[in-house]
Length: 105
View 1 (tube, rainbow, N blue to C red):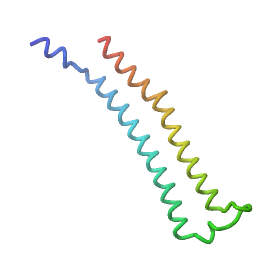
View 2 (view 1 turned 30 degrees about the horizontal axis):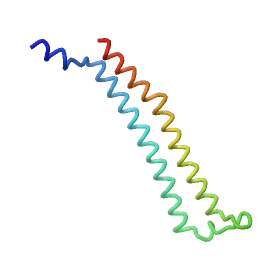
View 3 (view 1 turned 60 degrees about the vertical axis):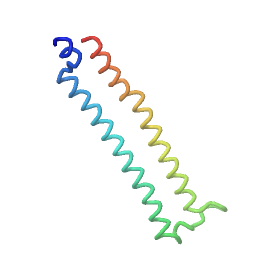
């Protein structure tokens, strides 16, 4: 009987810490998702309703639409890269510390 209780023993502070790590990851990922959706929807709405303004030629062969499209892709890639760096440096380290603290108990 004692064996069963010790194998399932999870202290409440560890559960709360794990929950806070999960909430932080979810909050950051939802924020990034919202930023990406707003960016894409904004571009689609610009293409839909402001075609003449987007057709403005900034340089020979380069219109405002091309510049905004490339900017949108760069923004998306930078958000994705930033999230991956954050996960590798902060989130994974928090999970590693939690796992190591559970192994020593």
